[in-house]
Image (cartoon, rainbow, N blue to C red):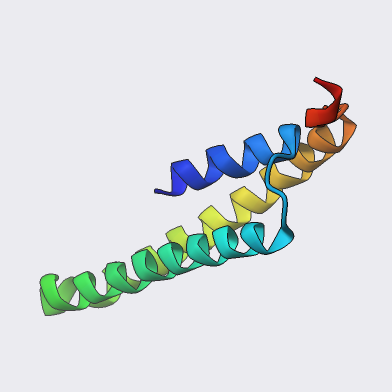
Length: 95
């Protein structure tokens, strides 16, 4: 589902076909809810399925992996933002 959100929002950047900013806000909210649900489910499954002797390590590893993923995404977003803002945007009226 997140791939669909990425496709829609990336297409919106270049084509500007969504008429109202509130639709974008709803998509971003939905994406945040999906991410939050995945995050909570990961820690729930670790707390339920992992043996007691490995539980602390598993929770720590998942926390570090989450933080590293967020940091890498933030680092990638800077050049991606610069590229997107340098691209000439074509509106539907120009087509």
